[in-house]
Structures are given as structure tokens and as C-alpha cells.
Length: 551
Image 1 (cartoon, rainbow, N blue to C red):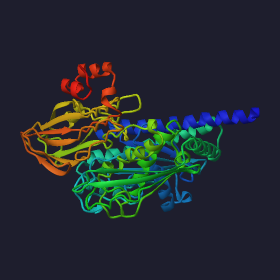
Image 2 (image 1 turned 135 degrees about the vertical axis):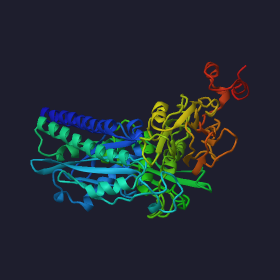
Image 3 (image 1 turned 135 degrees about the horizontal axis):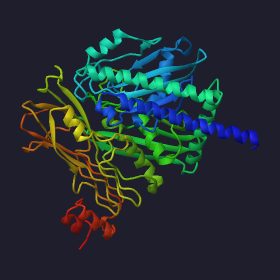
Image 4 (image 1 turned 90 degrees about the vertical axis):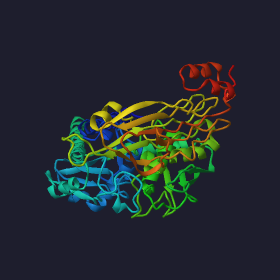
């Protein structure tokens, strides 16, 4: 390599890192200006920069994989509707189309072109979760997407810097939380603007007039790096099926993973048909979490962008629960979509067992609650809260699973203090669930126990969308299953895992999130680890004796 070539490579690498820093600042602006706790406290968002062909060059570290990897395709959908040459400085575009965005109506996707010298040189895109967009609310009870809330096609939110007041009025009129929803929408537009400003500063510093050469460098090297890792794997096809609760009948998620030197292809043939309830998954979201699981296992250290993602491909039968067709209801698509990395791991385990963990809780347990309030400042719409909680992850090779940890999404848990200041609810308990981690030489992570009650003389509703209740995470190689999830009342009544249900005043809602599965024979577990778990009250004395064989 000549000195000039080495200098060019170093400059390109520096600019690549700068792009990642720019989009991380973009995400932090969104995090700090958002109104909704699920964005501000939990990080349910994504941010990224794209070239003029709509290819993702860099994504923020902060953000949910389902948002990031669907966002990677969203910008190209926008470009088909609004060609680059028709865009103007100050334009901002928005949609919540589930099939063009992140898979359900509760996520807004916002795209902003960046101009230099009157020429569009990049696009910034961001997404965030909007807690209420009207309809039946954020639950699985609708029978089509139109019942689930306001459906926004690809529209201009700002036209040359002027807000579309008609659109904003429509958005605010179709949500139970108009202030929060309007504030979140402006936050999305603002963070894109900050990203564009920082990009122009970088381009001036490096004396760039275009990102074309840098984009080629990033995408080419990312794809090559992923393919290099794939070529180290055994070649062939491996299959796995996971059965989960579904809405009223169990659902089979069947996959075949084919590894070749050209990449990895996943086919979901054999998966159950789409449901009549809002647990269906658009293919874009199924693809997002499939690719995320593969990337974690195969190429976890390679930055995520269009180049690295291009080494993976996904197909699913149209009309299946993983390729739901419009107008299927899709509100709680995360319940099934976030199971897909575990489905992938079940395939990869057959060829490389030490590379992947046992099954975990997988899907985030997002406790959506709404109701009236006696606060005169709360407005006539009462409150809607998305309280993020997590179960345990599966045991790993040589390491226990992680307790109360979000995976495959990476949302932070909602702080109890925030929930109690913004709603008339009181949380009596939020603690690790003893014994919920599946036993094994390496143990599954623990779930949680959460107990909540109305703090005023009003009842409240829970829009339940939980899984792993009938079919818990499965143990691996002699390890035991993780504990099943549970939802019920302190009075003894068991509630349904999915659907809108009322919690009467004076009743306490009890949520138990699933534990991760164990790996290998529990009696091979270190006596020191068993004693430590017992001392930390992660297992009972009876479990230590009967399951682990400790004296």
C-alpha cells in the first residue's frame, strides 16, 4: 500500500467514526427532547444517516434494533414517493405506515434531506415510539390495522421550513395524549436537523463536497467483513421450530437457515398463518430482528449499515404471521418479532453450539396501562403509560444468563419513580423473581415480579401483550426451562396474556416476567456458584438441594 493509499484509508476510517458520533448525537437530542417516557427514559428510538441512494451509512448506538433495521429500508420507500431532485432545504417527511416503516402505527418515521451548496448530499432518518395514536390503543384486540389508530401515509411534515399545520392538527386530534404526541413529533424533526448541521461541519473540516466516496468505502468494507465471517462457518441448511402462545391458539415459528459463501438466507416456510388479532408481523420487522440475531451471532463487532446487512436475506410466505399483508392488525408485532433471534439461535446452535445462548424471555414485557385520573391538570384524556419491563436471557457458554435484561431489544426499564410521578399508580413491588432462571451448569437469567395498584379511586386498564406464558424458554443440553410468565391479580384471579382487561380499584395487578433457560446439567454447576445464588436469594434452599445436588 502506498503512502497516499494509507492516508486515504486513515481519513476514511476517521470520517466513518465521525459519522457514528454524529448520529449518536442525533439520537441523544431525540432522547433529551422527547416528551414520552418510553422514548426519554427507555430509548425506544433510532437514528441514522443515509447516502443519496437511501443506503444507511451509520446508525446510532442508542436505539432499538427493530427500529434501526426497518429504518434501513424506510428511506428508500420515501425516495420512491419523493425523488431527491424534488426535495428542498427545510423539507421534512413523515409516515407511520407499518409496511413502509417499523411495523406498526405507534412508530413515527421522519426523514430530512441535508443540503450543501444547494445540492442534496445525504438524508437523516429517525424513529420513535408514540404511546397513543388513537384507535383501540396499543394492544392486540383490533381486527384490522384501521382499528389500531391514525394511519399516516408518506407526507410532508415541513415544506421548506414551514410546518404542515393541517397534518399536525390531524395528529393531535387522533391521540389521547396530544401534548406528548406533538412534542415527540417536533423532537424527531429537531434531531434530524442537528445531525445535518454536524454533517456539514464534518464535510467542511475534511473538505468534502460529496459523501459518495466515503459511502462506497463504508458499504464495501462492511459487506466484505461480514462475508469473511460467514465463510468461516460450516456450509449447509439447519432448521428450527419454536412454538409460542399466540393470541388464542399457539403459533409455530419455523425457520431454515442456509449458509453459503455468498451469505446467509433465512426462509420461514412452515410458519403459522397470520392471526385475526394484532400480533401479526410485517415482513420488514421480521427481517429486522432476524438480521439482528444473525449479526449478533456471526458478526457482532462489525458496524451495522446497509453493507453489513446485505450479506443476509429473509423470506416468509405471504399471509403468514411473519409476512402479514395489509390490512392485517399489527399493533403488538414486537411480541412475535422479537422472538426471531431465538429462532435463529436454535438453527445456529446445531452447527456451532458455543456461539449462541439458550432461549430467553425474548420479547420485552411492555406493560401498557391507561385510565382516568383525578389530577385537574392531566386533561380529559387521563393517562396512558408504557412501562417497560424485561425477563431473563438464556444461559451462555460458560456464563449465566442476564437477569431482567432487555434482549433482543435494548430498551431500558421504566423507572418506577417516573411512572408514579406521571400516573395515579403505585408500584408496591419490583424485584427479581426467585427461582425463575432455568437451572443448569450455567443458569438462565431471572425475571421480575411487579405489583401495581391504582393510587386513586379510579380503576385502570391493562392492554396485555405478553408471551412465554404457555410455552416457556426451552433449556439446552440438559439445562432446565426458564419459568413461564404470569399475569394476574393479588386476589387470585389469573388474567389473559393478551387483550384489554380492567383492574378494579383496590385490586393489585401482579406481573411475573419469564426467566431465561439453563444450559447443561445443573448438577455440574460449581458449588461456589450454587452457594452464591442461595446467598443472593436467586434460588431456594430446596432448589439448591434437589436440582443442583448441593449439600
